[in-house]
Image (cartoon, rainbow, N blue to C red; front, side, top):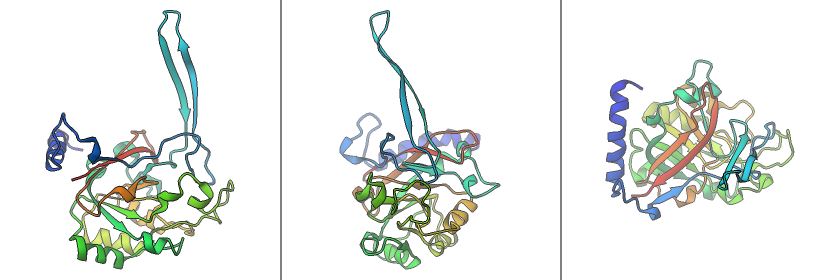
Length: 263
């Protein structure tokens, strides 16, 4: 991010808030949608990954007679509501701390393919889905975060239903929807989206073996967001989405606080 962009960014953010009819000191809680799953013992990770751990180091009364608590945590980068940095599948890609904030904030274009996903766990968003979306809601705006709504949030945190398997190491049993390579290639060629996001465990469908969507999208040096919560509460257009990842140096991904402001 250049010095000029860094200076302009807070101004852009205030304009975005104002556009949504919100004052800097009077944000309407009913217009804020939390799109993040809580990180705890129920957080879902890839079958080959570990799990989230949180342990209190101190909790209770101090010798000075006041309460104090402090804890340690550890977790894989990729699990729960999280970001994929380009370097995850792109040797020359940006690390998580290098991903511009401008790539994490933008108008949400929510493409609903949940009806098809309810009938087929392996379904993917197609170019036709994107074209149907634009026929109804207009062109995907520049700087948008294109959100795939499969309806998979209804399964969280049931790992077997959400992932297709709850067996450690069982990548062969993964079954959930994702983007198609054709759809992300179409977005890259025809639109100027900042990022993509999905309410499943991966931008690629669970049955994928070589992750073409990751390779195409992250290969273009753009971030992706996975396991996004409450996507069903977003309107197809009009919301502003914020997906702000933990700033991990050299990170390939990391926990992300996602939320949206409704129009």
